[in-house]
Image (cartoon, rainbow, N blue to C red; front, side):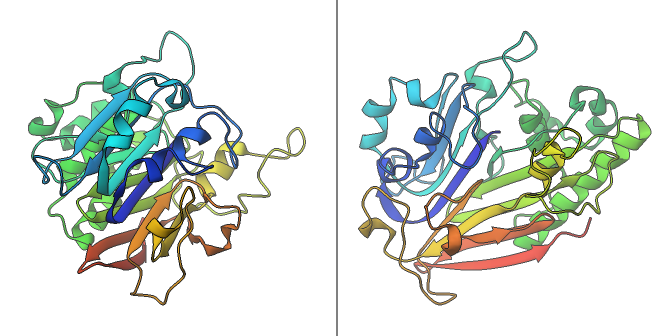
Length: 316
């Protein structure tokens, strides 16, 4: 399972997000908590900061090796700070079909859009589905595709479908994205469980989406994700469990005051100054994390120092 981590809030040292917490993204790649699988296929991050020479463009870092074994980490991360972050550790099989290279590490970034993307998910048979999906893709994004991952192709497809950058436009884009994928699956007779747990990030904004379709390309998927975890032969469906599992959101204030942790001070709705969107809760007491359930989209934006949050049900 890949892992996704996004942050918006006050400018803080990057190591307080990626290195110092006991359950940091880098530590998870070696000592995972909720999902006990190592992520050895690379990692990366994108940040925005007022202190970069070009504060309007993301600074991107990718490395096609295990995050905990990256010898550049201690030299680069402590020198950076950010107000917006999207980070990712990649999980993939080690076989001849998987390409371990910088170009296949998330997050992905294209010219001509404010958004960068990372996901914990998969689009099965995407290379064959391209027969039908390429008709929806714009050349200006296709020409920028450099790697061989389904996520980068989904990025091309989503950017091509967007009609604007408002929360409503992005929601419509995601709804259309799944619609054309399901249409392609039916046309090519390739129905398959598709997990799309996506973080779309721009300066001071996070769009988090948790959706997809089931084994027969159905979008009205339901079930208890915990009960579907492996328990006995023939009594579980791990893929369906992972599809239905929530994504997680932490909102609060004074994040910078809690050294080496992801703790925040709780506050009323509308007063939060920091937000973290992640593929799993990152503190021992997970009760303070909000669930973004299957079929939902959360839109977060930092305005005037505080975070606005909107959770909507996707119309799919």
